[in-house]
Length: 236
Ligand SMILES: *[C@@H]1O[C@H](CO)[C@@H](O)[C@H](O)[C@H]1NC(C)=O
Ligand SMILES: *[C@@H]1O[C@H](CO)[C@@H](O)[C@H](O)[C@H]1NC(C)=O
Ligand SMILES: *[C@@H]1O[C@H](CO)[C@@H](O)[C@H](O)[C@H]1NC(C)=O
Ligand SMILES: *[C@@H]1O[C@H](CO)[C@@H](O)[C@H](O)[C@H]1NC(C)=O
Image (cartoon, rainbow, N blue to C red; front, side):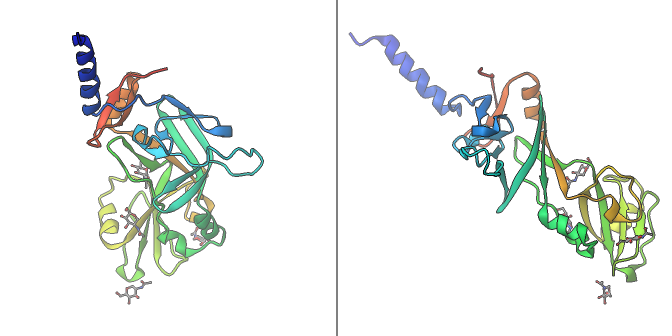
């Protein structure tokens, strides 16, 4: 007699796969000589398990000087340092082009937008400790908002201020000037932008609300077949 329970088992496996539950995502994975990594990073093989796949784990030569790399669009970044504490993740890397602009006090700095990894239903990245810089055509004669500093040594007027400002005159900048947000090095913000801007970029990961709850409960947040966040228990 063909056992009924075998039929039920096959049925359960089938339902399980159809539900968008893939194989369990590992909580940690080995990245060759570079140690263990976890969410929001993932391997190239299991891109469904995280937001950012890590390259360079199979580089077996510890002296080759090749750290792990990450890709933002078509752009490769070489990670200088990772900070991973419970659900806080920060990736530090040097933006070589911005570094070059800053070292030569170039006015092109204020056209340099830093590319961020695309946001996903799992979360998004921001530049930690950034300030907002507006570049305004001088003929517009924009007045300096209360919380901003002005520098006139480039062909355009440069206004520097906090990442968020409730100053109403902020709107006059937003409507008639171009804007970039760049990281600062910790020195006091002054009227000389080259004294406090840095090309050493800290990208911080912010889980989406759904994933934040899930991670807070010690579970794993990844994408299901419909690219929606799916909260799965953690497996050790
Ligand atoms: C930089 O990117 C921001 C956000 O995408 C955009 O609002 C701004 O206009 C860009 N600035 C320049 C100078 O391209
Ligand atoms: C700059 O910092 C603010 C406040 O922390 C944040 O909301 C914003 O997204 C950051 N900008 C970028 C380009 O990451
Ligand atoms: C500023 O605007 C004026 C008038 O629209 C234009 O002729 C000039 O080229 C602009 N200057 C810069 C530096 O963009
Ligand atoms: C404006 O920036 C330049 C560098 O481009 C700097 O030499 C100058 O001191 C700054 N102006 C003020 C008022 O700080």
